[in-house]
Length: 377
Image (cartoon, rainbow, N blue to C red; front, side):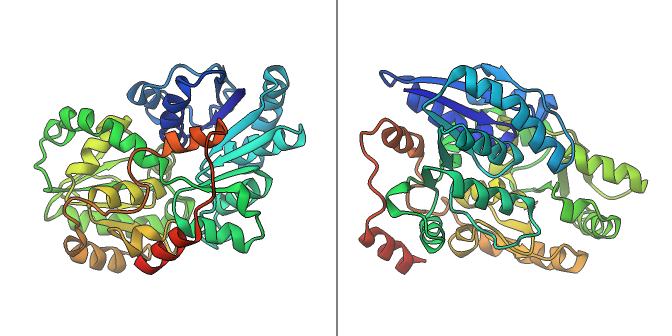
């Protein structure tokens, strides 16, 4: 069986790594990796391959940045010849970025089966490009691997055949479980002169938060207020740094607010696990903080991962100064010692997906499983 995995952004790499390891030892399976180059900064992509033990990609499309149309179109143009050359039995796509939907479109039009890892998530917010990518990719996919049972319910409500849906759990947690011992040995907080639980970690990159100067200014005001009481460590996404520079914003004199370049996966996981609180608009960090029990202020009006709010440590807040500060003040009460316990968030999702792909198992979630988890929620 010839499998082609397509990744393009750092969350994809964390989802690829466990499946790569799970497929590596399977007889009769050839697995090649295509990196679209959607993220091209060393700290935003290549270092994640090193940290997660993924080999160098077999193909790098080197697409780079651009508008959604430009990026999606370029990926399709460059991926099609690869797909024709490799002639895979299955193309595996991950998450909800432009690389995901572009590869799914190419494969499906070539008559190649598509598997979507992290299927069924819905924010129901059509202003989010990621929501469009999710829905289109799921519509095109033959195998849909869901991280939580609300994903099954979403897909079934949209008319997806039950036998195509496989509840396998959260593959992001596989990477976390795999890397956490090494990440803790990195002691990234200590390297920044920070005490465990004595700092706030921040990431902000979504256009809705950083592209409007007034919105970004309000969020920065909230961070500087928090930084007057404790250290705030802010690895700044290239997009966000560009917007801050355009505003002429300077961090000097803004309390203990530390702007740093993006960091690799192990350093980031180390910082998240030891933070007193995380403020973010990242979907992946909502999941990681939930598993680790770290309070998470999610600066978004909605989330495609509602389980992180209902069973985890995340709280959705509006992107204004007062809302962020109020949520930050109340965050400590949401800490879960030992982390949240959610079904199949156990580090074994990659193996479950590999079993389905290899045809060994793959029954959809049984009714009693759905009923039990629905009751727990």
